Image (cartoon, rainbow, N blue to C red):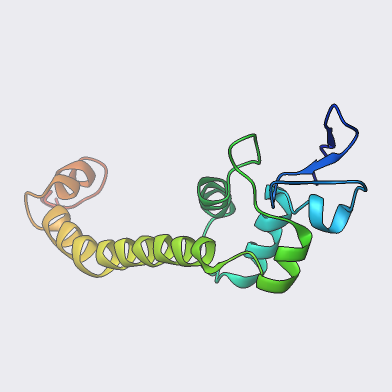
Length: 140
C-alpha cells in the first residue's frame, strides 16, 4: 500500500483521490490498494483450471499493472464500498475464454488433421519412423 503524504506549503495534506486539502491524514480515504493486493483478490475470483501459472501471472500483470504516478486504484473507502470494479475481471475472463477457445480449436480440429496427414503412408512422420522400425521393410 502506498503512503504518500503531500503536505502543502500552508501545512495541509493533499488527498489525491478527491483533490482536496485536509488538516489531518486519514489512511482510509487517502491511501488505497496496490496492484499486488488487487492481483491476489482477482486470482481468487477467476477460473484458473487448465491454465499455467505463467499465463495467469502474465494476464494479471497485463490488466493490473503496478501503481505509479499515472495509475491509481482509488482509496480503501472506495474499494470497500464499490470493490475494484468489473473491468479487470471482464478483461481477464475474456482473455481466458479466448485462450481456451484457441486450445479447443487446436485439440479438436488441427491435431486430428495433422496426425492423419503425418502418419499416413508417405507422410512426414511415416518417413521418419520408417528408418527406425520395420515399417515398409520386407521380412526375410
